[in-house]
Length: 238
Image (cartoon, rainbow, N blue to C red; front, side, top):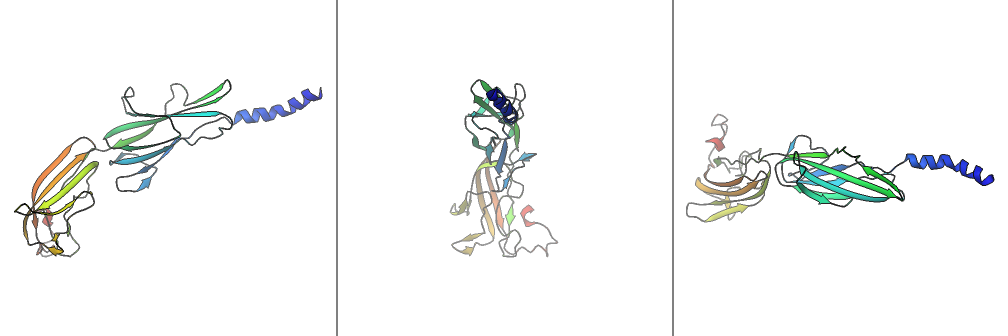
């Protein structure tokens, strides 16, 4: 009788333990193309976008936990892009489009199995990668006035996953090259600003949407250009 009473006294504790069932709370930290970390990528985002996904399990206790991540393009769940079995997942989005990231978790203890999410209850995280855009000006003014002193991609470029650019003079001599989108040419060669005139820009790049940018254009160097004297016009558009 004492044993029965003792077990009955422990029964509320058993019930309390059952109330705290294992669960997960998927989350993500993203590193944007500009190198900034964020947890919010609502709306369209530039590529490449680095993502670190977390299962964030709770109340696992003695349960055997199994994790499964799947990534697919929205509307095409039959074609899984990523399928991995780990608690955390790192992945870089280099392709434009909308993507779903779903965590499946199973907790097993004896004959007791708890699954997340429930059957037919997918609730994935979502990421949308924008289409690419890349443009360059027609001219720049490396005169040290702090305005348009560097030949570089126009503001607003997006979702460029591969990039290289070079500038040549009229005789085909390479004056400068760079492979970072935020880089550019300051108009100098061997430490000295080149003469005013026409130079040649060659750009080879690829967008997250598969678009290839094979730009070949002339660039005017205008060191004597004065923005105020020209009425506030932009030499880059001339």
